[in-house]
Amino acid sequence: MYGRMPRREFLQGLGAAGAATAVALPSIPGYAFVDPPMKSSFRIAVINDEIGQDFGHVCEIASKEFGMEWIELRGMWNKNLLKLDAKEVEEARRILEKNKLRVTDIASPLFKMDWPVAPKSKYSPKRDQFNADFTFEQQDEVLERSIELAKAFQTDRVRCFDFWRLDDQAPYRAAMNEKLRSAAEKAAKKDVILVLENEPACNTATGAEAAKVLAAVTSSNLMLNWDPGNAAEHDEKPYPDGYDLLPKNRIGHCHCKDAVKKPDGKGYSWAAMGQGIIDWVGQFKALKRDGYHLAVSLETHWRGAGTPEESTRQSWAGMKKALQEGGAV
Image 1 (cartoon, one colour):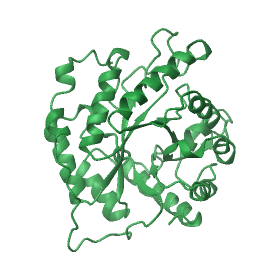
Image 2 (cartoon, one colour):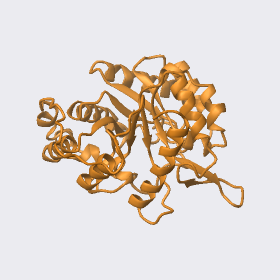
Image 3 (cartoon, helix red, strand yellow):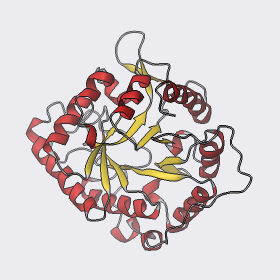
Image 4 (cartoon, one colour):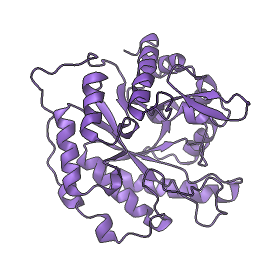
């Protein structure tokens, strides 16, 4: 668990990163793809560290091999994104420009933590999560840092969560909603949108729970990072059941992974896209029908091919097939 980091150290280098001038992404003569660039009404992407920690290599795979024009940033060079210094931010920007990749969002760990006055959650991790454990007192700084990174990487979206899951969230629900509302208002002042991920270890895990939170927190700067794979972990049928409950104009991001029921019938395991129980063809069709035009971002999680890179490669093949069958490319 990280101790409290001094504010000066926590925000070190942000001035240079945040003040960096926006740069147009150049065309690269002789640029060759294994896959042609994916033309879609969606922003087709992958979470970078699902492939690996070598950011230059990851971006080459995403752009040249997968034919993507978008990428989601979470961690690189064995660091959580929030811990990059100014030189590393500039190097990451250079690599993105070289590979003609734009950033969908900053996959921040904001509010992935215990609610401070509630009993400790059984989901509270015993070890660091993606090098990103921060205290409740640090959350304002996490938000500020995430917004600065969003500006540096020219995106308007920051991912957040709804605190580690409680057996009974009812006594704390109004206060948690107020915290989400306050964070969205702070983000709005910087023209940034928070996208709340439904996460099985957090209080908002399913489409049904997400719909309730969005109804309670009406800020247009709080949207949903819809994750059907995570919803399945709580025995919700993500599509069509969970999806049908969602306000479609509040979906601001989408994570793509698949799941299968464990052989003993208790719980789920991750699967390559197209090899699990989620109707991704139907989900992609519905998103397109409902006018969604933002990110569909591959979050592999499955490691059945041995390495993160090869597992992501195989999962991308299943995702691409589902996009094609869903009429999304």
